[in-house]
Length: 599
Image 1 (cartoon, helix red, strand yellow):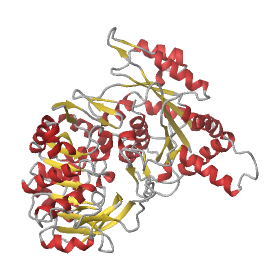
Image 2 (tube, rainbow, N blue to C red):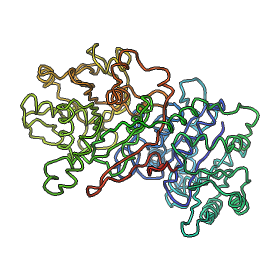
Image 3 (spheres, rainbow, N blue to C red):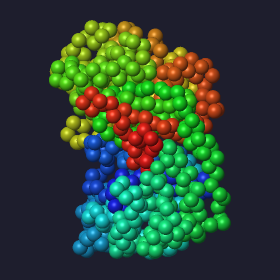
Image 4 (tube, one colour):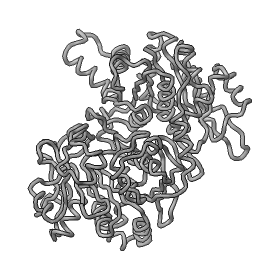
C-alpha cells in the first residue's frame, strides 16, 4: 500500500482539497486504484452539527456519514464512494480511545496522547485505506490523505506526530509528502516572495515531516530563479517544485500538475516509476477545453439562507455546473438571500428588496436548496410562488420541496396558515411534520441520513423520464421533517402530484406540478451524486428546461456528447450588498473573480 500525504502551510484556503483530488485523479489516470482520507483536527465528531458558515456545506455519504466538503471533491474527481470513516476527526479519535479506556482495554496503563492517541490515528488510517471505494474487489493501490488546517496549528499536533511515526513505519518508498504553500506577489514591487514557504517548510521539518514535493500557490507561474531559491532553501529537488497558478477553470488543475510532471515525481518517490502507464486524461482535457469556450449564459437564481458563503452550497453549485456544461451553457448564478424577498425587508431595506426581486425575475430558473431554521422561509415560499405562477423552471431540494408544498397549500387550497411544524408548531394545517423516529434533544446523527430508496408511483412524469424510467432510484438524504402523509390526498386532489415515495408509501420523496414546464421538489439531495460526465438527472432537467432543451432531453435521453461535457465554464457568481451586485463565490477553495479561477 502506498500513501500520499497533502499538508498546507502559511494560510488556510490554499486549495489542499483540490490539490489532493487532482493528485488522486492523475494517479488513477495512470492506472492505479485510489482512495482518499480527510483528516479534520476539530473536536466535533463529524461535520453534522456545524453551521455552513463555519465550515461550508455538510457533505453526506451513502452510509449516512456527515463529513467535510472535501470528501465531495474526492468523490467527484475520482468517481468513488467513500464512507464516514474516510473522514477522521479529533473527536472520533478521542472518543474511540476513551471508549477503550472505559472498557479496560489498556489494562490499567496511563492513557496518553503518545502513544495511545497517535497509535489510534495510525490504526484508523491503516484500516480505512484498504477498504475498496471503486466497486472493485481488493484494496486500493494508493491512499491520498489530506491533513486539514495549517502546519503549526496546536490542534494538528497529534496528527503530525502520528503521521511522522506512520511515514517511518511504512517506509520511505511507500510514503510521499506533498506540502501546499503560498508564494505571494507583493503588488508594490511585483516580486514573488519565497520567505513564507521557507518558514512553512522549516516548521514542517521541525515537527518531524520532510516534504518530497512542494506545490506552490501563486497568482502566476513561478519564475525559474524563484524555484531555484525555494529548492535551495527548502532542500527539495527543483523538479519536485510545482506551481499552482491561476487557471481558467477548476478542471485545469490536474492538467496543470500533469504538465509539470507531478505524477513522475510522485511515482519516483513511491518506487512506481516504470510500473504504471502515462496518465490518460484525454477526456478530462476535452471537458476543460469545452468549459472555456461556452458563451451563451443560463441564469439560475439561488434562493437560500447561507448565500453569504457559496461553499455552503458547494455540491449544488457543482451539480449546476455539470448540468449547464452538458447543455452547452455558461452558468451564471444570482445569489439571493431569501429574507430579502420578504415584505419586512421592503420596509427596512427597500434597496435590497428591489435588488432581490430584480434578480429573481431576471432568472431563467429558480433553485431553493436545503437548509434549517425559520430565517428566510417566507422568502423561499415567495420564490416558489413566483416560479409556479409564472411558469419558471423550479427545483426545490429538501426544505425547498417542503416550502413548495406549503406554498401550494396556501395559494391553491386556500389554507392561509399552512406551515411546517418546524416553523409554527401550533399551525392548524401542518403540511410538513417532524419525523416520528427523529430526536429533538440530540442533533448529531439523528436525522434520516444517507442513501434511501425512492419508488416512482407515476410513470408518465418528468422525474421518472429524467431517471430513464427506472422503477426506483437511490439518493442521499439529510432531513428531520417530512410532508404530512395525512394531507397528501387533499394536495393531490388539487393538482399536486407526488410522483416518488419511499417503500412504505408514507414518505413523500418527489413532488411535481404536471401542467408546469418544470416544477419539481425532492426530499433527497441529488447534488451529492452528480459527477463529471454524468450530471444529476434533476439538475440536468432544470437547466434543460431553462434553455429550451427539456423536450428533446425527455424524448431522446442524454446525448453522448453531453455526457462527456463537464466542468466549470468561467463560472460567474453574483450577489448584492446594499443593493450593489458584486462578484462572489468560492468553489473547493477556488475563488472566482470574473477574470479566472484561483486555486
